[in-house]
Image 1 (cartoon, rainbow, N blue to C red):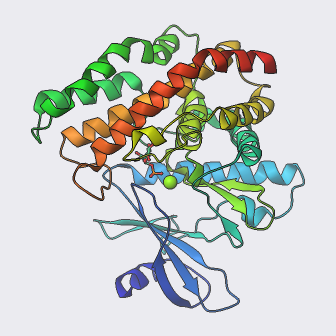
Image 2 (cartoon, rainbow, N blue to C red):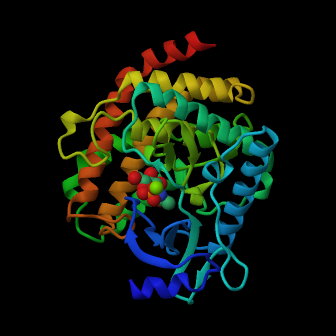
Image 3 (cartoon, rainbow, N blue to C red):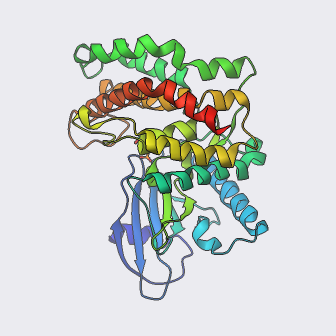
Length: 360
Ligand code: GN1
Ligand code: MG
């Protein structure tokens, strides 16, 4: 607590700190709630994982551009409650929205009161979330060339496969043999799954500003009304294919089990969530989506469990250096659960195409 307290002292924060407690369940950054004495706003303190986000300055400049742009858009629309619908980052002593001692990187944002995150959605709020992510992309569509890639090749499937193949070749943790079934299943789908990169090279598929980490728990809901307030965790907001946001949301929200479920039988693709989210997303985004983007939404729904399977497996083979783990085979359990989800998505693909067609 004292160490954390001394970090908050580098930011120009109003109010007196009462306590600092852990917050949230992210796999990359460390997050804390800074509780102040009553009547004053609380804050969120985050240690930015600079091994993952190697250019923190670019990262924060992206976030500042995104939050300012969203705020301006909401103002133009005459919306109220803007302090709960946009994130606000506080300047440190040097005026930047992060502080570093040379080894660790920190930032502080305002804590949004009377709001909650959820680990699961129901069909009613899945539609609202679809609208919210579609709207998020629509609001940011005109600043694509102002944002840098905070993690180069983040959702580039060809690159993720290359990393996995390198992990296999290095076999650092001696685990390759036990995962051969999953490696074969991954390779069998590799060409199809790299379709987005091919379409991009052929000039048929654009990049747009995307959130790129649209897990259910990266969205704030109003505690009382259950309305979506805003999208959080903006570290990966960058130019990408719209498949990123659409596919990654379904990966986390339309899973009947957990991302790391130890029992693959619990894991299935929930078509009610799929339908509700897709209806909301297409409603908000149809003004800018190209036919090729809409046509490939079922591909996106498969791509993200596939990509996550590849990423978890690569980390397992490398000896668990990227994702936080709770037990030694955690990344393998995650791999298996994501693979089961992929299989279930594949079974539902014709049904997904039919539903999307019915919306147009
Ligand atoms: C990471 O930070 P968190 O937990 O929201 C990861 C995502 C993965 C996700 C899997 C920067 O997100 O890409 O989909 O874990 N973020 C980064 O749960 O790698
Ligand atoms: Mg998160």
